Amino acid sequence: MPTNKNTSYRVHVQDTTEAEVASVNIENGAMTRTDNALYMGHNNENVIVYPQTGATNLGWARYDDTEYDSNYKLTLVQDAEVVLSNNGGNVVRSHSSINFYDSSTQKVLGVNENDVYIFTVAFKASAANANQTFLEYNLEGSGQISRVAGTIAYPKGNDAEHVENIMMQYYTDATFVANGVQLKVNSVGGDSLIWDVIYFIQRTQNAG
Image (tube, one colour):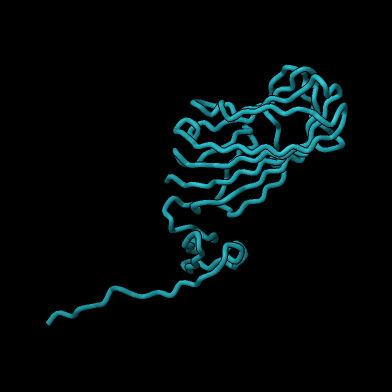
C-alpha cells in the first residue's frame, strides 16, 4: 500500500510594522508580514516576496538639498532656464525599496507606466527687483508632462525671503519610466536666489 504524505505545512508568519522590519536582526529564511508586504530574510537582507514587484505598493520619499542654504544660495540668472538643483544630501523614505529621484542625473523617476504621483517642491527664494521678477517652473520630459508647470511671483518685495511650496500631480507614461524627467526653473525679468530645496515625492497609485 502506498504511503501518502502531507506536503502542505501551515507556517505562522510574524505580523509586525515596517519600522520593526527595518531594525530587526535578519535571519535567513525567517518571514515577517506587514500591512504592505511579506518579507523573508535572504543574504542578510529582508527581501520582499509579495507583492512580486519587489517593492511596496505605495509610499513616499523626501530628498533634501544640502548644497544651497541661507549661507550659500543658488543664483538663477535672468532668462537662463536650469534644473532646480537638489543633491539629495539627506534622504528619508517610507520604505527602503522606494527610490523616486536620482540625484546624480537630477531626474524624477517613475516605477510603472500609468502610476500616479504627487510631487511637492519646497524652497526659499528672493529677488532684488521683485516688482518685475518672477519664476517659471515646469517638468521637462516627453509627452504631456511639460504641461505640469506654473509661475511664482515675489509679492513681499525686494530681497525679501519667500517660502514656496509647489504641489504637482501627474501620471507616468512609458518614456517617463524609461528616461525620467527634470524640474526646470527660469527667473524672468531679473535674477533670483533659491535655497533650502526639498523634493517630496509620493506614489499614490501603483499601476503594476
